[in-house]
Image 1: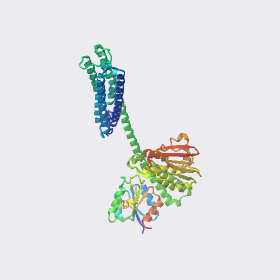
Image 2 (image 1 turned 30 degrees about the vertical axis):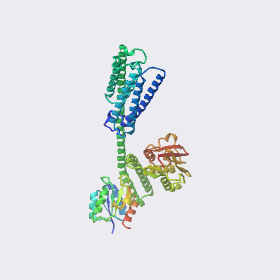
Image 3 (image 1 turned 90 degrees about the vertical axis):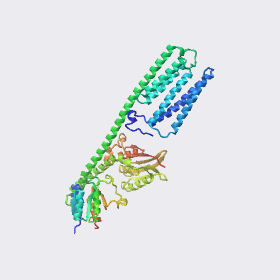
Image 4 (image 1 turned 135 degrees about the horizontal axis):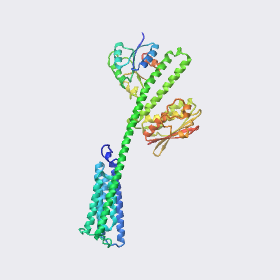
Amino acid sequence: MQANSPGSHSERLPFLTASILNDRIAWSIRLRWLALTGFGVVTFFVRLEGFEHVYISIYYTLAFLGGINLFYYIVYRFKDDFSIRDEFIFLTIHIVLDVIILTMLIHFAGGIENPLYFFYIFHVIISSILFPGRWPYLFTSFVFVLFLLLVMGEFYQFIPHYCIYQSGFHDNPLLNGLIIAIFTTTIFLTTYIGTGFMRLFRGSQNEIQKLNRQLMANEQERLRFYRFTSHELKTPVVAIKTGIDTVLNSFGSDLPQQAVHLLQRASHRAGQMLEMLKELLELARFPEQNSLQERKPFDLRALLHRLVDSFRETATARGVHMDVHMPEDPVIISAVEKDIQTVFNNLISNAIRYNKKDGRVVIVLSHTSDGVTVEVSDTGIGIPVEQQNKIFEPFFRTAEAKQHVSDGTGLGLSLTRQIIEKSGGAIYVDSRPGEGTRFKVFLPGGN
Amino acid sequence: MKKKILVIDDDIDLVEAMRITLENAGFDVIDAQTGERGVALALAEHPDLIILDIMMGSQDEGFHVAYKIRSHEQTRDIPVIMLSAVSQETGYAFDPEKDEDFLPVQEFIEKPVNPAALVDKVKAHLGF
């Protein structure tokens, strides 16, 4: 299948791709079955009413239409490769044959006496929407010629006229002229309006695509800037921290206790800043890094067990009890294991750090119809309702969180959500201030 | 006799900090701010141990320096401790199991270096 490659058709015809056209073909085949059945049923009932007419020609024409529609369907169903050019050729053949058959049906069903010729408008509209440039006008001219030939042919008796009522419409030159004039004006105006609107539509689609490309470029630029600055900022902080640590280590015993304390605090703060810069780098690097890593199946249950074990000591030290509910069997999902580990590492670590003494952390892994969910709930400080949608923004920390745990970057949850969304999942938060927080992570797949 | 340690790092402040730490721990310290100068110094002075920064100028200059040190007969057996900014950043996540033969260094230490830990590592590699 040909993709919507920039610079080719998509520039001139945005939103028109081979697959969209292919959908239209399927749609037109369905519509044709419907028209065929409708026409057949109406004809059948008219005949039941005892109406005298040349039904056999109508049935032959319908049978022919049915035959080619079946052929279209087989081609549609069994072709495995097609380009936008092929699709245009298919559609052109379809629509041209359609109006020829419609003309025949009008002819057999009374010619100008039968307002069936309104149906040409459908084809004119479809061609105005689908075909590029001057094509719709060419097609409309073709429709005009067909209709003119039909009306003139019957008027000058080159072809027979099948009367459906004894009105003598087809013999009346004034009526013939009037109908042709109105008909012509209608189809050409329809084409004009249709193509005009489509030009506008395609123009705005182009604009949107251009803006979108620009947006992506800006985003790349922003990430480069993040990376550059966080790297450049890190180098001096490393030097600052190393300098302070060296003084403390080599000359600490000669310094007054107050000076040692102050330097220790300065070193701690420099360390905090490095952590922030590291997380910032990771956040900025994640989008491109992620595209390089392969998703592989792994056991989420085992990963969670490992993580919980690694947090046991910290939890016990803080007087937090951990509870785990997981299925008996391994839960295999396909994702980048290292990233998923980062996700639950962040969530579990938060649940412990922002908990109260004698608090609980509960981790529940369960299957859903189309994936797995992991709930990490705590009995901690909670998140004010109006801030619950902000916690996934970079650098955001609630006032309560800052008060409870002084060092923290506010980047963890931002990265967590990025990873989950890249993995095709979703994260939800549900929290009551002072009572606790529950994060619910959905990940697709799972055995 | 004092053991001699060569520090190759382009950040002079870090070199001075390490010098103080290592000299206080009883070592002699010589230093170089470029990889080229570092290799020349290693050949001329034959230090007992080399501390080498990965990121000098280019992202991975340290690795090239390490290979050069290993490729010279006279410096082949000198233990090398490598300093990295953040392991992920250079794209060289070090896995001793896999990379031992590949990377000719004894140890990786992540910056910022804790002075006491640095002395411990250096002593361990010098067989104290």
